[in-house]
Amino acid sequence: MEVKDLKPELLWKCFDEVTKIPRPSCHEEQIREFLVNFANDHGIEVKTDKVGNVVMRKGATPGHENAPTVILQAHMDMVAEKNNDVEHDFRKDPIQTYVDGEWVKAKGTTLGADNGIGVAAGMAVMIDPDLVHSPLECLFTVNEEIGLEGAQNIGKDMISGDMLLNLDSEDDGEIFVGCAGGIDTTADFEYKRSYTPENFEYMRVSVSGLLGGHSGSDINLGRANANKLIARFIWDCSQRWDITVCSIEGGNLRNAIPREAYAVFGIHSSHQEELKHHLKKYYEAILNEFSGVEPSMKLVVEKAERPEYCIDSETSLRLVRAVYSAPHGVASMSRDIEGLVETSTNLASVKMIGDNIIRVTTSQRSSVESRKEDIAGQVEAHFQLAGAKVSHSDGYPGWAPNMNSRIMKITADAYEELFGVKPAIKAIHAGLECGLFLAKYPKLDMVSFGPTMTGVHSPDEKLLIPTVDKFWRHLCRVIEKVAES
Image 1 (cartoon, one colour):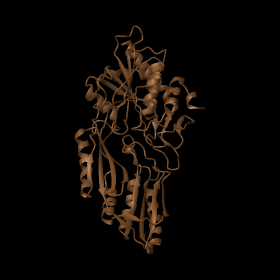
Image 2: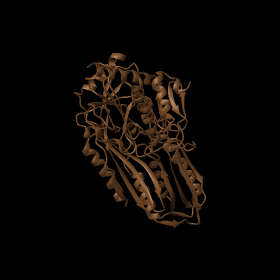
Image 3: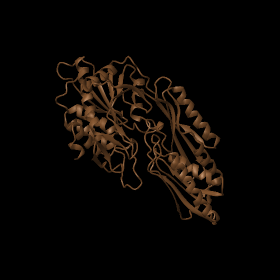
Image 4: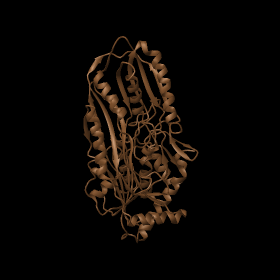
């Protein structure tokens, strides 16, 4: 069975169309054109702003013109992550989806259900002939995954409603009414190139097969960080023997826990047997540490050709020590909401930029603004001590829960009516665009919900099919209840 043949047919057909359009963050030109053409083909009013956000508008079902205008909101971009052995150009190639039992998956890449299923739901609502609704607006934002650019710079008069349904959550039966704010911290190490020693043997050590995942919603699961495992091994070797580090790379996106990393390093040829023995002990130790958490972890050391250059010894040791000792993971739990991560930091990527810069990218999140600034400050101080030049992004605000929200009550009541159980009302540690919308439109009443998906921001991303039908029925019932109010 193909994705387009699943039920509800209208929603899955829209999702199938979305997966065929390349849309990595910062490159949403094709999906924007697709959405504008979709609106024009169906006679729907459509508008874009200068940063590329798209809004569609549809008048109310006759007799419901005076009910509140409902805004459906999703982001166009997707995280572009793939396995190293997969050939895929996210700027040109469609996602290769397939059905595996109760799940929809992608072949070796992120699926893009985050937030393609939200985009598809907005499209389907706009063309559903049977849905009773008040005035509707569908807002599709750009570059949510890297900097929330669309929400940060939404054009004037793009939306006019007072109720917003954010369709970017990942757990059936849960309604989100708050989220963490975030900020990125970048550390640049400037280095000099040195000629590699002739009497050294050179190795490539790599970590792969980690689960990775979303740096907000998965940060509390105790998964391994590939950057830290590589740095730990190199640091440990440096305490025993003279080594030289030629290159080091790991991770990719600031909001993904790094799954893969590698380094090329040299060690005096007289220590080869000792290194093999040490590697075996190290591998056994980390497999034991992450037993039951990282079932597919691989650590490989293989011989490499002698590179012409290496990183100067002072910088390489400062870098390795800094990455090894850098904070990563949960910093504190919420005192107000049981089980909610309050503050965390993600050691996201290590990249060699040109011939003289090694850039370490991290991201911090917190539902408490002062704690967000504090953890970012701690990370800054850490890398300053290592001699790096540190900078921060502008960051984005959190979204404080409003437990008296009218749309929250409508959304919760609709779920209970349909499925006979009360949904959980929660806040989420991941970042949502709602905080930015609220800063620009203080009267907005908002909730966030969606179907169940797991492994987001990694090639293990998958979407649970039965919950998509529930999500669609729930969304339609919420819209109908607003129209009836």
